[in-house]
Length: 150
Length: 150
Image 1 (tube, rainbow over the protein chains, first blue to last red):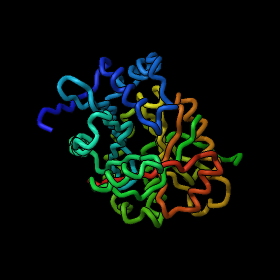
Image 2: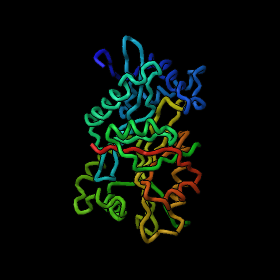
Image 3: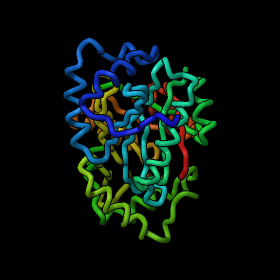
Image 4: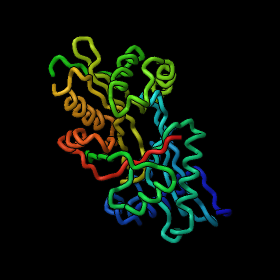
């Protein structure tokens, strides 16, 4: 992992991020890799919000991983600040390289720096390998995640 | 539901909100209702963030329900904006009154107004009644929710 750089994403990373989002069989139908306009529009909203931390992992000048951290202050859990991790992806060429672990360990450490008391994420129920991966990192799958498309 | 008002929470609502958070058997051990100082400190962070929407339901001048909406812009799902719903509570005296449904229907409509394409929440796996409630509202329990306490 020594040649790996984990840094804030920029607009220039959008094509590589979208390619990874769309390469995922569970998510491919939700993405539009041939039309990046909606992603650039969304990027304006992400970049304008100081509590959003879109992130890429880069190796040898190539974007090979991504995730987004969102800082959410709140009253529950004695005023806990949460970090939510979304859109975790590792490039197919990097599977098994330890990059996913390095990226999530970075996310946990960065969440601490951001003042979070709790890190949370949801993972599609079909992704059983991912569930074991998160449990190895210390996460507990204590909740059901509900979604409603508007 | 005609005498019900759903409005943004203010600092003056904190004692009533914390009482509802702590009245929940699943969550009671995580709250400190006898020491409100951490909640007032957290309130400063919540109130300073325009993407946080702490909310109360009020009937006859009394706070009887609460939830928090968090707006999260992102790249995944073709640049979808999500609303995350946290800390949903209904006062014990109001259970079965339809207040929970009214509050969540309000949350869904408000999420639309806030530009969201997706509403999501997690619910402790032990809360099977809550799971049926969210499914009746149109949510799909498609994900596992993982948490890591820092």
